[in-house]
Length: 369
Image 1: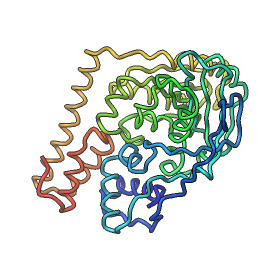
Image 2 (image 1 turned 60 degrees about the horizontal axis):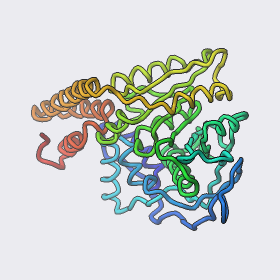
Image 3 (image 1 turned 135 degrees about the horizontal axis):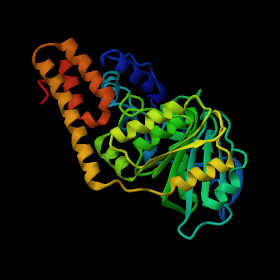
């Protein structure tokens, strides 16, 4: 089954009270997995700018089952699994045929003693390119840059943009000495929204996110909050840097996103406003400042984080209890509406109890406690 239809199904879940989703017939076999030659060829890995790069290694993180668990809300994911079970179809392991994909890769000439850093860039445009003037900045920072073609705003988020970024990171790390503590995801405009989703869902891979002129507030349903274990790791170890032009209309959006981070116990954030800039890709100078900020992880105050998490947990439990009371009182329509709101606001933090409640409302279980 293709993830493009899965993503459409997830939107219907949020709109239609998690009702049954009619999903179209999809691929029942895995995509081709011919092992393409490494980007660097044989021998010493190449440095400098490389275009039309072909990768061939698949990542366990880009498996569709992982995308389903991490990048959709629990109710959306559960409904899709049930739909698959009803139809007898199976989710294909990977949605990307790497042999058909192309990437741009920039590798500084000299690897730092502890290995390169890595910047995985999600673009709003369709071609794979290195923004003008970024090369020397990457050289000074010791950062490899990788970006996929056909990963722009017009592409499907779950079936292409997100797995392409994960596969890019995996293949670079297989071919070059990369310091796992300096692996970051970045994006511009629409690509920045995707970068935030990836940072939330894969905090064990991405230690920071560089969000340029595009972001969303947490707790709004987009992006959905990941399972609790992943979100705790995001709170503790992920650095988020916002970069926006002072004349960019998205300045207020990014401010709202950062404020929401603090409400959701994510304190390691920084905002940089580029003087004179509108909605445009970061200049080399702005990129240099942003990268300097991105590499400085500030561990949250343990006591502050604990208090914030306790408050957040009480909010989750109160919302779940309200829904449970509506179920027990036979107010199914109100309970369904409340449960969808829980799923939208709290995502993975409310699972598995939210999923159990949905099963009850669907007539598939005896109760949820």
